[in-house]
Image (cartoon, rainbow, N blue to C red; front, side, top):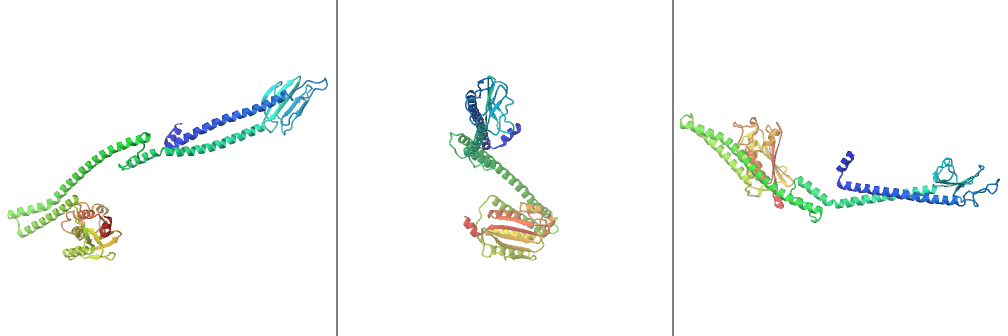
Length: 475
């Protein structure tokens, strides 16, 4: 019973309602069928018994003998062919009238009068309805087979079964359609609840008449959602803003302090030596102080660029010719590193293609990528461009030691430095802001940036920007 109850609770409401409706209709049809069948059979058997009683009290009634030697017949007329008649005379003589292929089994009948009862056939055959009367030593038995009654009842039962099946199917289908239509508003409430649980706090339950149960429920749920959404949005926005501001400030202060500490320490050390006359080569000390000051200047400028990008200051966007941008960046890199092989590959690029952006900032992106390759590799460097659908993809490929998967995941983070053994310069690394500036500038241009690398197989840094015609059409 518990298993059935648990299974019923696991069913959808519409299935449960239809199932219960069909079960109730089935019980009702079964009860009415039993009642109708029983009443019909009782009526038919009553009519048979009435005919038997009329026969045994009429033409089949036993009569006394006309004289001592010749007993009288059971009646003045021969019985109709639908009856079986058997008479037993006082001398034991039995007379039967039977137009059927079978005969009733009379061995179970008691002596004396017998009211109508049902007996079986002798051997195989139908059941019989039998009545017996005894008078003056003569007994008359009248019987009739119940074949017609049984056939009528069989047809009635099959008719009820067929009609019942049709009624059950029709009621089941109509109940399902009716229940489904009636529960459709609840289904919409359910869909809305699932959408809200999935994060769509702007969804609302469709409006229904307020005098209905679903309409009242929908109004209550919508009012609750408005309050929850407002409180949730306010809390989330406040928390996110506070966390973001605190995290940015903490990281900025910590990283900037760390980066500025080294050049400041060097400047202070050389200045102290010069002030006390302890510097063996004053000119070298001044040169070193000037170098550290230049390093601090570059670091501060990079920090200012990131601060402006964080403040989401708008860029000066205009159509920028990609080919001169690449050529100028490569020529500048060749001038700063004349011993390095820096090539340009434009075989898959249309030189007339333009992008929408800030020329100076895009020049800074290319300069940072090429400078990063020069600082970290000894092999050749190739700058290429290609068109990929609505975007222009620029790549800077080097033949250096490559990056590990961990370094690829963090290389665009601020102040991130990889393995110092991969750096060519004596200082071990730069400020760690060059690639983060690249990522910030590309994102400010609504572009994408990434890197592909494997240890020992070089690195491929790339960024993708929307083409100028695509950007114009999108606006």
